Amino acid sequence: MKKEIEEQYVYMKNVEEIIKDKKMTYSIFTMGCQLNENDSEKICGMLEKMGFSKIEEQSKADLVVFNTCCVRENAEDKLFGKVGEIKKQKEDRGTIIAICGCMMQEEHIVKKLHSSYPYVDIIFGTHTLHKLPEHIYEILKQRKKIDDVIDVEGDVYEGLPISRTDNIKASVTIMYGCNNFCSYCIVPYVRGRERSRKKEDILNEIISLAKSGYKEITLLGQNVNSYNGGKNYKFANLLYDVNKIPGIERIRFISPHPKDFTDDVINAVAECDKVCKIIHLPLQSGSSNILKIMNRKYSKEQYLELVEKMRKTIPNVKFSTDIIVGFPSETEQDFEETLDVVKKVKFEQVYMFIYSRRVGTPGDKMENQIPEEIKHKRFDKLKKLVESQIEENNKEYLGTQQKVLVEGKSKNNENMLTGRTDSGKVVVFKGNEECIKKIVNVTIESDHMWYLQGKIE
Ligand code: SAH
Ligand code: SF4
Ligand code: F3S
Figure 1: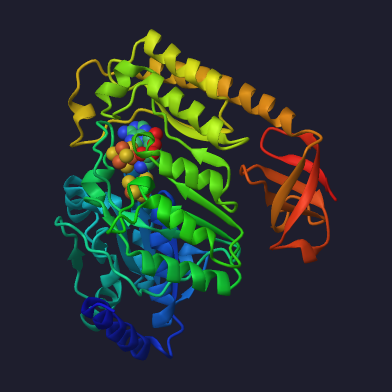
Figure 2: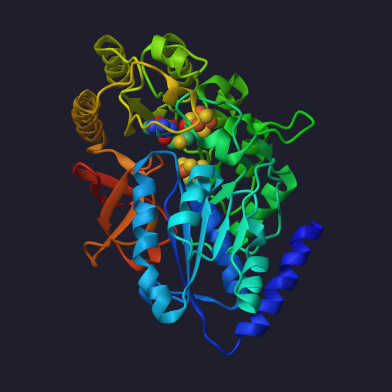
């Protein structure tokens, strides 16, 4: 283990000593993507190792952590609203407030926190997550304010404790950062350049997850298929190796970039029986003009060819995607091209976003920004098309037998179980609790917009 991490274990012990008779609690609010959630699991791991216990009600917690995201604008108002609300709680009971995550890597946000919310105790960025124990120690000892945001390249730290939210499905970050600089996107600025974890560290983590009973693994990264494990060990090699781990039954990964979806990765998806045959393939726009300005490095035709190639190599493969509407200079014709790709590919799921200007990105400086009402009109039109396609796709499941990984009782109906198909569809069915954590065959009998209902075989 690296020296920096060993030092943090010492801080964890010291904090444990200080708070041991105090029964201190924490609550965490995670605002971002799955990478952000995985970071939160590490934060929870460190806090629990120090002796804090997790509670849901923020108003009763002794420590409140906000793990922020800045990929779109609305998150800012939300954070400032929350930090404003908690002021009274801090005055009343001395709550410790810590804010971390991607937004803290933005200078103007940290400045605003300093000037308008001076009562925040700890601010730390994405590259210094592992130092939380030290910061908590300092606060408990001296109650001084801590600022720990660094702009330099982050390192890859192994060996932090982790407290996971689920006991069937687990996320495993395989690489950090992004080198792509899509012109709308803030992520490369706040997460730094690409750094891959060592294959041994990843495989050992998954082996131990399998031993603790986890069945499904999602490999995470901003650009997973540019994973570089050194010595010709690439993403495809990792898929083959994870596929061999006994006990793991399903493997997913997000997000791959279409430009890096090389033949070896396509073959690995086809050949690895545990890799789910649904690929999240972010499109962003269907117009080659817009894709060029977005710096996506593929055209509409190349995207569609890639889809066709995968369909030939991977039987019954399905797709999901991300789309942005209203990028600067997007014309009606450009938008129609996006609709055209959606019609052609018939995605299982589309995550739709209205373009949001991010300070410091090239997109923000572009002329021809699209008026809000046009963006919203396009968004609504896309949403209608997507929903009608999901309905059509759902019909294709009727009468088929699906392998469902059972996750537990349905939240809406105690007598029913719920799980997901390989393609990620939620399936609800009657069955006994012994099925939980197992893959069972379910025949689909009816379809609803966001779930399917079926009968266990
Ligand atoms: N690295 C991943 C995802 C990054 S963020 C990828 O390349 O696919 C998740 C999604 O948020 C992106 O795919 C994009 O669709 C959306 N997004 C990113 N920046 C955005 C912005 N400025 N405005 C609106 N949506 C954005
Ligand atoms: Fe952002 Fe593009 Fe990197 Fe994804 S690949 S994180 S969209 S810059
Ligand atoms: Fe948001 Fe950071 Fe993820 S900006 S989308 S939490 S990498």
